[in-house]
Image 1 (spheres, rainbow, N blue to C red):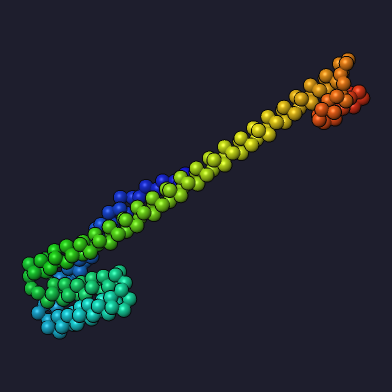
Image 2: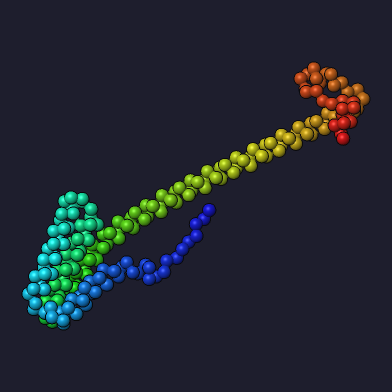
Length: 203
């Protein structure tokens, strides 16, 4: 059976592409709000964010050494970068440095995201190709089995029609004068009804 084709909404397609920029922009906006509410030139806040950033980076290194899970390691380092970015953007006065860091962070986020998108796309294409091959193979098997069944039905129908015609011809011939059924039986033909049995066969 043909599977229904579901068209994805353009927002569902665009959302993953915009996610890195949305994430870095959100961090920048929150950091500047924090800056306006007392984080500017606050050494304590800067030290806190630096410690959190180093902790996240250490967690990424530990995860890479223990599990080797690239997704977990990437998440830990992304969190480390976000915390460092938020700390600098919250501590600095003015926008030039936060905007510079935002552009660098966004570029790095897209560089990492493209790698995962490419891998995901490759896996999706491989899966779709495998499913297409399997559907074509099943469709071919179904067509062959259908043709085989139709052929068997036609052969059976032809054989039945031939046997019926032969029986009818022999019954009709048996009713004619001079017909020697014993000679046919002796030649190997099966015994066919004669006389009263032929009349019964007609009924």
